[in-house]
Amino acid sequence: MKKLALTAALLALGTASAQKTQLEFWTISLAPLFNDEMNRLVTQFEKENPSVELKWVDVPANAMEQKLLAAVASGRPPAAVNLSSDMAVKLVQQGALEPLSLSAAQKKLYFASPLDTFTFDGKVMGVPWYWAPKVVAYNADIFRKAGLDPASPPRTIQTLIAAAKQIKDKTGMYGFMPNINGINMLYMFQEAGLPVLDKSGSKAVFNSPEHVKLLQTYVDLYKKGYIPEDTMRRGFTAATELYSAGKLAMLITGPQFILRVQNDNKAVFDVTRVAPYPINLAGNVIHTGLMGFMMPKGVKDKGMAQKLALFLTNDVNQLAFSKVTKTTFPSTVKASTDKFFKQGGADAVSQGRLVASSELKKARDLTLVYPDASKLNKVFKDNVEAAMAGQKSAKQALDDIVKAWNASL
Image (tube, rainbow, N blue to C red; front, side):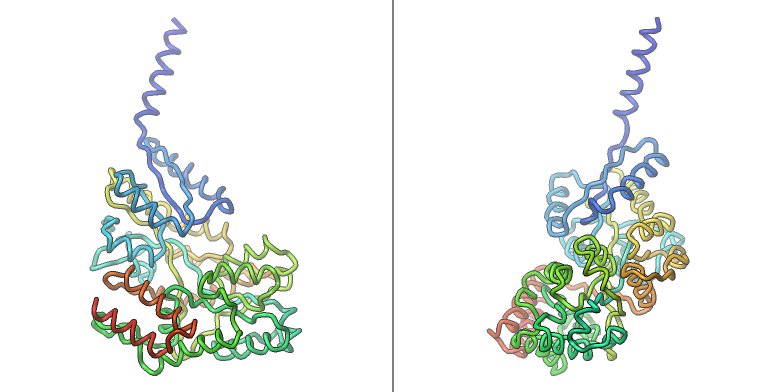
């Protein structure tokens, strides 16, 4: 009799397990550093929703778009997917995402600017998660060797470029590696107070003499050997590697990447100090890439998927994530007021958090929405690379991009 009862109980358990809704959520490049926090979220969500079995999948940034499109095409998308703002633009245009239906109260949990970033044609296509304004991590030893005062780092883009030249001239090492690969020059224009599109959003206007002059500044630095050869090819990844190897004086970075320096080279980390991102006075804004959670097309249980996205980005969980990363900031109003963000410290990670927290008021995700983003971005990238390589003048490159964009816009 006991044996029968036990068998029945095991069968019931198996049935209950089989009836559980299987959900997945995907993040970008968080493993293995943040495994514990992601697993905590899984456990907590399953506890609050006993009918759900949740699985976390981490995806490399360069594979995310293709992997998601394949999952949507096969009818097996994750319930929630972590995307950057520029990924979201492309995937919305490809019809790969579903709108969310947030109440007024739910919208009020987030700062207006980050929520607007994920709003397309009046539809909220995602909820904002974390962001971190750029800072400048700099090597105090290299500064001293170049005759610069580590206590007085550059405060504007113009003085940063002058310092970078002095560092290269005096030490032979690179001063900085500007983030100008891909379409990053579009953000540089906006940080300099220069428009990319006209007020209607239907005409590209970034070939004015001011735009040309700004691009020419970087072309000249590249031509004269003041910035590394692989700046356009490998961008930020190469900059982080060079800095960690003690061969780059200044790393323009989100403060979360200072942790990577700490892991890669303790000696360099120990002489690292952190300064605010040097603003261009004309723009007085810092492009700050935003991460969010979206609901892919074809999700079976939209209600549960939205519940998951809201859970992952609620006040409690955004604050917990910031405390684990030590360097990212919440996009929710309440979590952002926590005293944790104002705590300084002697090490570069603590300095980075404190410096970035003071920059949040200037932080804006400057990602623009325009049709055929993937195609137009390639035109932009190819022409800027041609200008950097000396195959076109800066003016010719921008004229050619604007002409191609306006034919499409």
